[in-house]
Length: 79
Image (cartoon, rainbow, N blue to C red):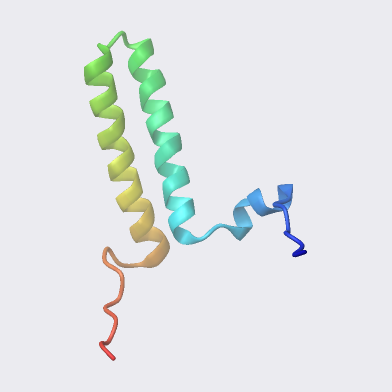
């Protein structure tokens, strides 16, 4: 029988996240904030969704750039 390690609450701590996970978390938070703001401003669901997703995408790109220092990952050398 093999022993499996179950995730603990410490696995969810942001200090253990990769740069990609941090950028995605920021994008999710921005999408939620924009959706709530759109609801408060009484914007239609379709427009609110599009605005929230584009704002999340922009936040993802900016956060990724700030964390890694480049927009594209480094090229791998062929073997």
